[in-house]
Length: 204
Length: 266
Image (cartoon, rainbow over all chains, first blue to last red; front, side, top):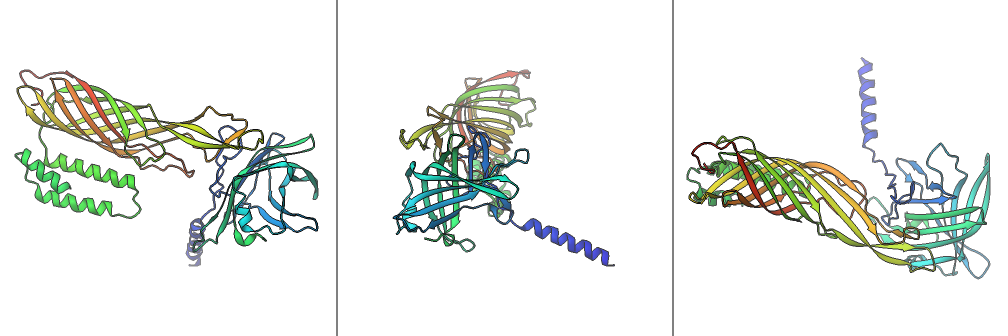
């Protein structure tokens, strides 16, 4: 008698699981650059780039979180300028190739009074390797990470705020391009990002 | 509107007495178009098909009493709500009425629309400090449209002596639209197009209505209005939408298997 009840309960659970909305990957392949996503400004939370010709992407966490989002933070320093850090985890989206690098960060010098409005004012601004730093976290061996530093270029094509809704808080959107190099051996090329993060997650 | 069309047609067609059926079709139309979850294309298709059904049911006259193959071409303009591009095509249309029975109104039609325009501007950006940080790139979108229809044709005689008549065709079929996107004349190594469009291809059921005039025995002029497609346009937001062509064509009918001593409109 209990067997039909078990079957019914399992069926209901399976049906309810199907009702949970899966967050999309939002990877739309660029026709010109194989394995990179298109340059978009829709807040898709996707970033792709080549590191020495290998395509890297921010990972997909799970159905409820979706793509890994970046960490945007103001790092307070004792010097004249503070530092704006934008970082996100990366991987090669196939098991066939080992992901040598696990995280990418771009650092910009900012004023001590840098605020959210200053971040929005970055829209349309291009920063060159004279001022920007590129950091790559390299997984050299099991559980050992090495931080590598070089120079970066970054272009904030668009920044903006999305209006809050009943289910989502106000979000900070920013999209653009980046590239960089660490010495002569590591080059980061064709980088493009399209992020949307809650404004509550930033510390300025 | 449907009632109006039917009433106006009742003046032309002597055996028209379908007022009750007009009422039923009106009710059917409003029920369908007020259903939730219908997108604009489906509603437009329902409108066209309903009008076509009204014409088919209540303005029934006669079909051509001969078999024919019709060839026509002309110009086509997109009447969907495409904002960034205005699509023009050169349509090539083939119609075939395989039967010569007077009351058999059915025929087949194949349309192929060759795109001749559809340009818009996009922005491209670069990190290279020695280059302008953004440029305008010309985007060429070319929708190739192929449609296959089965339809019903209804003729109204204008002049028996000259063998001229107007006709209305109601069609239902499938349509394939293939969009080819190209960005021309820019440095692909240094610049990246923001929110680029991509090629897209889909097939869907469509409806159409045609108003034509046959004159000088074999010549015809025709206005073809087609619904947009109800197929999905994908998850990625494209700057273009499916095309709903409105075609104005001129053509020639090749009659064959002619009955003896009968005029073509009979």
